[in-house]
Image (cartoon, rainbow, N blue to C red):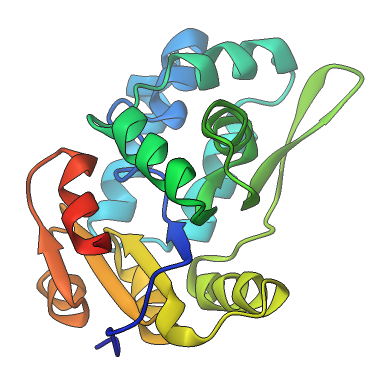
Length: 216
């Protein structure tokens, strides 16, 4: 449980399911390649059932994309829908001068798109390996599933902020670590009871504008 009680000067967001809605870049890319039913969906179902960890799931997904043009992944990233209220929330944060960051187990192609659009200052995410404009099938696992808290702490330290000046927003078990090192934590549309229990605030509506009152 977070400490709370301070002025929030940094908000660190998970990405998939928080800043973006379904379908994910993983699904969109598989559908472009015609591999969703044969590979993408079975891998996702296995991960959701606890039969494999997220890091393995992500590596297996990108392995299927070997040989695909890098431009196709860029197209997929551009098609990922934003969560309702994203524009309004970042407008509010930017007007207030609040620093923002993404710490995601998802892909940099989506995170960088959001950072450019909303002026997000810090991004940590994984990258689909590529060379000469083609995906190699590898994954540069920069943000392992269990290590998101480390990136939040590094960003907080870079800005020389106390813990209670930081808010973490996430929806997954991977985000509980971030909740523990932030002053205020928000479970946004989290399904798992343990994620909801670990947060100071729970938002069930798929609308990021509900975060604004928590910042006042």
